[in-house]
Amino acid sequence: MGGGNRQDLVQLGSQLARMHKHNEDCLKAAEHSEGFVGGDYKTGNYKQGVNQFGFHTTTCCGFIPQNNEWSDDWASFFVRNRLKLQADLLIEKGDRDMREAWPELERKATDILASCKGVTPALVHGDLWGGNWASCDSGPGKFSL
Image 1 (tube, rainbow, N blue to C red):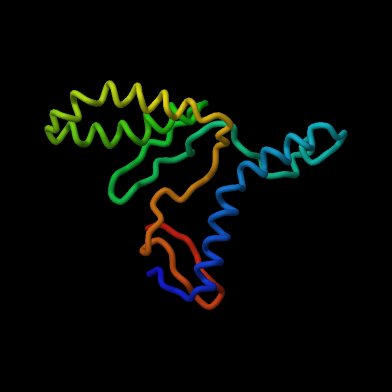
Image 2: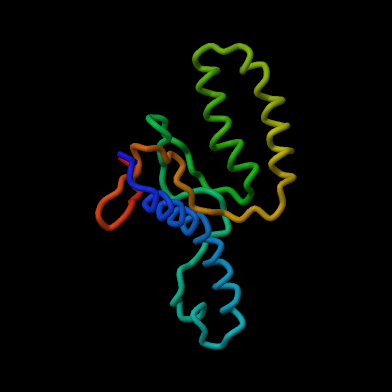
């Protein structure tokens, strides 16, 4: 999988960028329409964005299921649903260093990520690699198996 020519790679990059911006664009459009009587926001004629971090279903990174439970802030989501999962896997395998370091790592990671202001939720492909995209006559496509 993967492969493709240079133009396919450029198109794939553009598609990924649009996917990453989609939620922000939906939120801005809804906010803009709120000021109009009978606007798209009132009729529901727009794609609704989300203000929380997460996803409506469990996804996988490789063979590892990832919890995507909704969270109101980026730091809590990432630490709880991404970092803690990896730390727990190491701890379950008997990694004593991780067991001892995790409480401090959790606090510091939360503090660092919480200092990043203005983070808007975005849909990302969390497991993009050469086996999760391909190119055909109509251009590149993204998928997960």
